Image 1 (cartoon, one colour):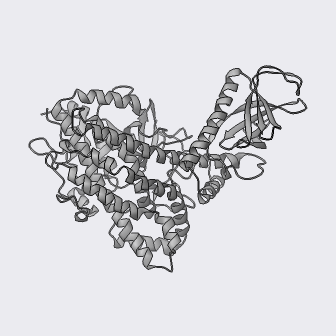
Image 2 (cartoon, rainbow, N blue to C red):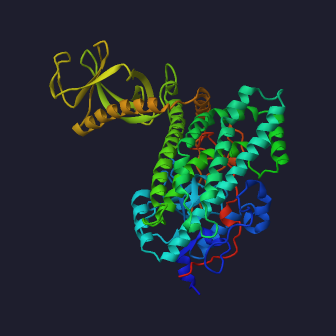
Image 3 (cartoon, helix red, strand yellow):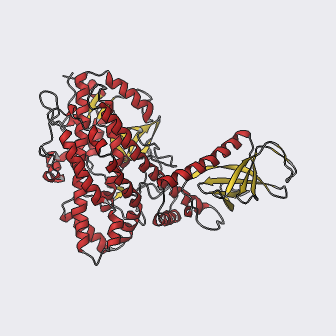
Length: 574
């Protein structure tokens, strides 16, 4: 017997599966030996243990574990960029301790000594849950190295079991993912093509992108994965080579993710009409799909590609260096991490355009084209003194975006109010650092100064910073701006016109209220209807951008396979 305190200290999500007498997790009865996705359904999962697969069952299970003293940790799939004090900001790969999960869409958690709400669909629950040392919650780098070191010193049998747990999770989630892709292709696309009066070929290409190509690719990937899977002894499985073999194939996700914002904008427009809402719901019911809206299903490939590096990182942690699969897993982790980083960077860009749109709306007297016509990221901001050709000094607040520098004037009475005063095109100017001293053209002595000179040689602007360190930051910011522009061009980072228009529309409609706390624990961010994006997914606080991930809208949370056979915690055998 293992004491309650020991069970609370160390347990596994995969230990909720049935365990055989030799300590190995029994394979799920929901799939056959070939792992065919045709042989199980969501209803099968519900019948396996209906209690924890009912709506809210996953949150109930997590809260029961927390109540028993267990530490429940999750890893971030994406960056969560927020300016709301009620919310927990984090980066992809950060570890978040889940403290309370009774709310369907928002969980209460701790990261980097701070507690706040965070969107549940932004994280993946760790397969192997361990008590983390103080200060380990937060960034992924140091914590992951410490975890790897601790894993190497664990009892060999426990480490084998933990590796088996991760392998089993990869296999289970892959099979369910295939089923979701099949449901989209057969349940939605096939029906849409039959109704040519409702959908044009161009519309279907926009909404579904290359998801059929992804479905074909993932079927081949799963087939090879099953060949390398050791059903009797999962910890001996050698699946790293599968990821390396199909490494180039995962590039098709880039096309899908680039198209996804346009897909959601197109779908949002159709969802304004009742007949399309009824049609898509009929497709879901006819295919006997789980209760997730179409926009939620269309987000699953984005979630999946971002989940791979987290799964491989955990698998690598519990793979001994002498294991035959160690080198392949390590290489696969690096490869999938690079793919996910590109996608996460695009998501960060899309979150940034929402903030830029809201910022522009707040500026008094804005003139000319919208910022989003050329820019997608704020690089640096601060106050500088602008010196005119006549030698007159003007205090201004400057905002450096990619491709342009915007300058504003603060209101004399309300310092939080900004008036538009102009902009400079950073694509057509050269940055010149000036030494302190007397300037012949301007007359007075200049300190901490630099110039922006046009390509024709005419001076555009002369600026002075208050301190040398302020000047240094501005010079570095201009170098960063040029570097990021070049990187975006190389990576093909472009925001669609529909996405820009949607961001501006949401910015103009955005509310600015905030929730009040109660009982020492702030209220969960309020839910509200997204406009114009059709709902049945997680919504965000009114003080945040209306779009969070690509759509930018989160799907309704679906029950996790972690709990499909939840009966009781089964501690590892020593």
